[in-house]
Amino acid sequence: MRVVLVGEEAAGLRVMREILDAGHELVAVLTSAPRGGRPLPALWHQAQALGLPVLPPARVADAAFLDLVLAERAELLLNVHSLVVLPEAVLDAPRQGCFNLHPGPLPEYAGLNTVSWAIYHGERDYGVTLHRMSPRIDAGEIASLARF
Image (cartoon, rainbow, N blue to C red; front, side):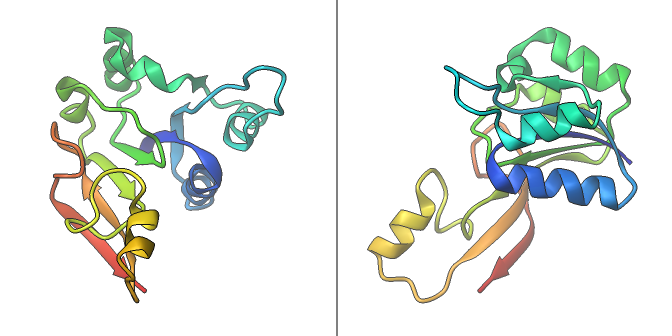
């Protein structure tokens, strides 16, 4: 499968490795670049080391990004710990769709800082959600919900 990964942090790196280990092809990785003399972010560094095309996340808003997704015949776009909002045309481009790995159980913990809110509310269990991305943030159809 031809995949575009929009990701950040250790979770984005882990998903990149899982995609590659499963034999899928990453056609582009969008992640934050190094800033202000700080060390390279792990996902940026690893994707570059593997020779993958690496772009800044803000590129999702460029018309050229939609062209890239179409030209590369991307079948799936995964968003992992990234705060980008995809234009509707991009949401419709990959044949299998665009999915977000949300760090909380939906719909009760949509938005940001979900772990902090769960702690604040004294939750005894939690979860993560994989959902189809839609024009409304954290509102797409749930594909999978794992509780722990």
